Length: 248
Image (cartoon, rainbow, N blue to C red):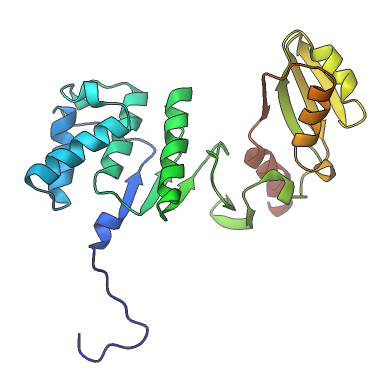
């Protein structure tokens, strides 16, 4: 290019190979083998010979489908289909990942896989963007944009304690055989508590209490077993519910 302006830049790598896209799903896979499908996409990305074979093998291994290389694409389960989409996105070692509802169709092991892929991408100075319709956001994200009917409502850090728009957060604690005692211990912290069974504690915490760590610490110090804790529904969904009505 002759006399480029100071605002122009060059890409040494084709832009199409920099981005890996994982859609929510596909209407139908072709009636070909999984490895053949990935070979087609690798070839479309410019890979040939050993580089192509290596990329396909690496992608299959990364998502745990190496033993299904010879299976037909149109016969996979919903979870396997999502893993195949992840493998396709990782073929060309992209530096940017675009994920559409990344947890859809995945079991807990699959969700952990997505979280690890996100962490690995960030660790290698990559970037990840995800659209999550149900508010179930995998860990590792730093920034959150909340959209409602196509409009940007809020933008901020991707951690619940950074948001004060909600009156309370609803959480579920797993306290095996100790839910009632757990409710008593955190009575001075929680706005309200409910024990649907002996093992589960549902409570509401004020945003001013800060991170949930305070509540977990109080339970542990009191000798209450805490097997798990989660926002229910996911905290971004609770945040959207608190914000959206005021903007309708």
